[in-house]
Image: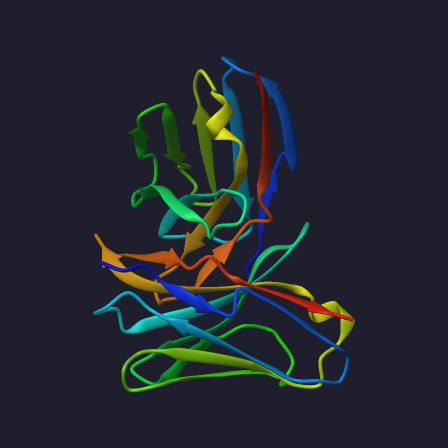
Length: 114
Length: 110
């Protein structure tokens, strides 16, 4: 089974621009979650999609948005970029193991905002 | 909101030593998970715990689900250089939202 694929792996943007990140989950997984990882802050939950519907949302401003397509692929968008948005953005698709929601992560998209 | 306090933030140890790290929360969780992140990769699941008091091993790794359901511990025995990385605890309380700790960065000196 192919793993979770995220594109692009690296990108550099300037303040005020917007960015779109893409995530292809493991085949058959219908849930996709997005996390922001910064040094010292760990993984901060952004949102989770299931069958094209946003099921959970973290505490991020409205500049952060996402969507999921019918093939379960997901995109997240950040508008009006700020320096503090520089981070590793991780996508994970999930499956259920004994009632637990097990996340399988992609390698991430590293965003640098200048 | 729910928060996990993970400690220590970083550890510098000698190869062969045992390692302990823990995670505490003011909220209860139904499931505790431990992940490891290697450089340049996403986190990978190490151990999942489903019941209060549960003790589970995976090779040299042992993790426990605290009796109060508000904490969890991970021990690594006889560390080796490839244990280097960031270890994250994570908690779930039903639903599909997973809360992560800030991570413990482990350095192993050969």
